[in-house]
Amino acid sequence: MRANSLQEDLDLMVALQGEGQVAFQIIFDTYWKELYKASYYRIRDQSAAEDIVQDVFTDLWDKRHSIRIETSLSSYLQASLKYRIIRLFNRSSLHQNAIDHLMGRMTEMEQAIFDALEYNDLERTISQTINSFPENMRNIFLLRSEELTIREIADALGLAEQSVKNNVSEGLKRLKIVLLRTDPDFKRSLYLLLVTIMLEE
Image 1 (cartoon, rainbow, N blue to C red):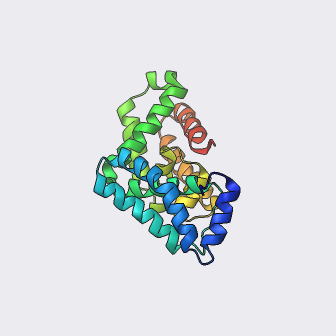
Image 2: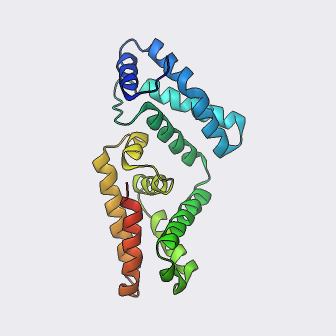
Image 3: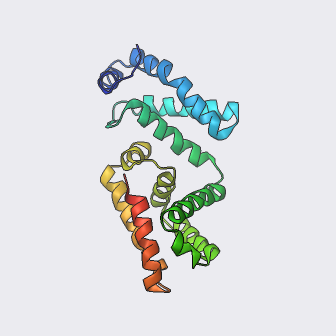
C-alpha cells in the first residue's frame, strides 16, 4: 500500500493515532527513500542524512496524537525535513543563503531599483535586521526563503498558520522601519517587493 492520495494519507493518520504501529511502518516504507534522497542531496553526508530522516520519523511517532496535517503526508514530512536541515546548517551560512535568495528574487522582480543601489549596504541591512528577529520569526523567514508555503511552515514548526502569518507581518514591519529610515521614497519600493515575496502563495 502506498500513500499516494490525500484520502489514503488521512486514513493512515487516523490509523497512526490509533494502535499506530502498522500505519507507521507503511508511512516509513513509503517515504523513507524519498526523504533520504532529499536529505542527502542537501547535506552530502550519508550518516547525517540518515540521522535527520530518522529524526523526522521519530518526531512523527512522538506527535502522532496531536498532529493535524492539512497538506499531504509527503508535504508535511518534506517540510519537517527541511526545517531540520536548516537547523543543522551553520546559522551564519544559512542566514547568508536566505539573504542571497531574497536579494536574488528582488533583483529579478525589479532590476532597475538595484541599478541605483549600493547593493552590499542593502544586503547588510536586511541581513542584520533578520538576524535580530526572535527565533521563531527568524526561522519563519528562513523557511520562506526556501519557498515553503505558510501551511508547510506551520506544519514544520508546529504553529498555527495565523501565527506564521503574524510573524511574517511583524517581520516585514520591522524591515520597513529599517528600510525607510533613509531615503524613504526609494526604500518604499524595496519594501513593497519584500512584501510581495514574503506573502506570495
